[in-house]
Image: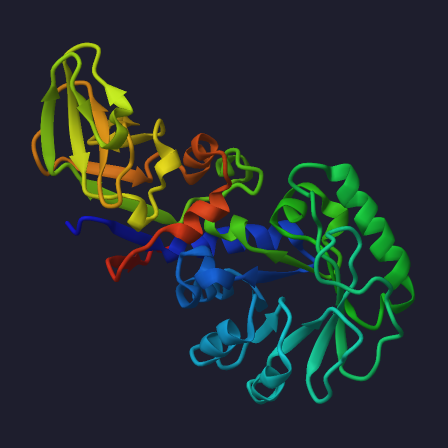
Length: 339
């Protein structure tokens, strides 16, 4: 086995998309595959999502969209982030759709006007009269996973501003959390990202929505050591044995995306849970073993009940960040699951 092996289950993405498409219907499902498909591979994620019922793909930048266009010739691709002036011609040639967050509306290309209703980032303070080329109206919810009341206030402002145009343009508001938990936000299309990959947008259990994690991360034990009382492992002696302790060394560290602040999380060694102890190094981590194991014992870093959401709680971050931060260095496989 490679020292760090990431496996992407495209079948899980397909099934998640199928589930989400059913949840948001009759609205369309638009799959967000920015940041290389949240670390899952944009092309593979796009394929699974489209096969599961998504009708459009959303990315953050024109560069991401152009790369995706080379492998997805006939699908709608919407660039959610701002486009520079020198990117417009290439976007037009590639038949992309752009989101406009200021008064400048480029000609000869389909655009979506973005109203800032409370995100306080990109967006128009007031919605202007839509001009030729406008195909959609949108906003971005700031708290759909933490404060539904504020999300509903954003929706109310959006509906008030866009009401006169409801039958003329596609209106889209919902992200993953809103699509799942706030049905009133689904409107004409829902932009789902993190849920597509089987990660709970609220950091809880994706299984409560019927979603399946698509990413599996594996390694192995390369060394087993016995620590006598008072002995330590790793930089800074953050873990000092108070009694005889067996530890396993796993050749994965923060250079691979297993962060230093994930000390204390759990992984699987074989079928048994094991706590990560000591300081996570650049390319190694240590786990506390209940008993010695053989060198080469399989280690599951994500999968079989070990979730990115659980790791994120230990690291005090979100599953999005962990998924995007896993570095595969080419040691990645994609598997197809029928369904």
